[in-house]
Image 1 (spheres, rainbow, N blue to C red):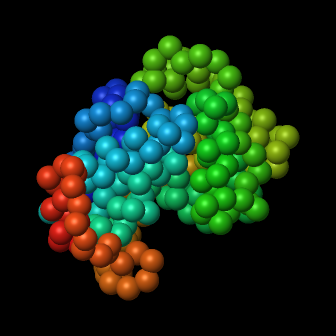
Image 2 (image 1 turned 90 degrees about the vertical axis):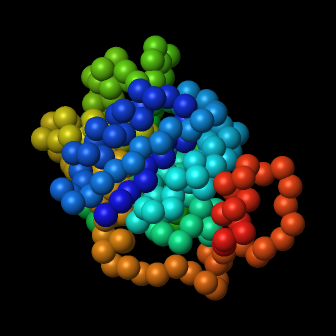
Length: 247
């Protein structure tokens, strides 16, 4: 099984965190291909940055998806996920949707712990778009400046654990979802230290991708995720133009 994992931001340190957790989670027979966005921002925090990340991800997917069995958009918020499902013939998964799916199998209400206060409104919209706003207990986030996006776990580990504990004690969370690729792997170190299950988006996406490939559900040819109709276009990167022509 071949999985393509795309980091929609430009931080190679975050790609390294994603890869480490993905390799710990993947089956022995699963091969991983890692890609980092060729343009964009250091980490996605706003709707507009997500828009940039979605376009960067679409370009990487158009160039590298052929030959893979599934594609993972490795940023919380899943930038570009729905659009890629229209044009790619293989399953496409995102960290948010995968983590929420895992959380719903483990408890009734979940809390999201994030790296930034600014990110909270967008995350709430993403949860609502997934039809799960009624199961969201809270979104709690760091309110301190980030010295480096690749060192968030080291720099703010105690604060992140405290946010998780407050989400359980004060918000009634049955499950904690650690949001964002910079927190990839943190769930492993927190297991056993919190009174509820902890979910990681990267490990969830990898395992759900393996399940979908094994299920072989097929590609939609009708409905809202059918391929886009062929039409004139201009100014697109060559790989995206080819993808639209194939779709």
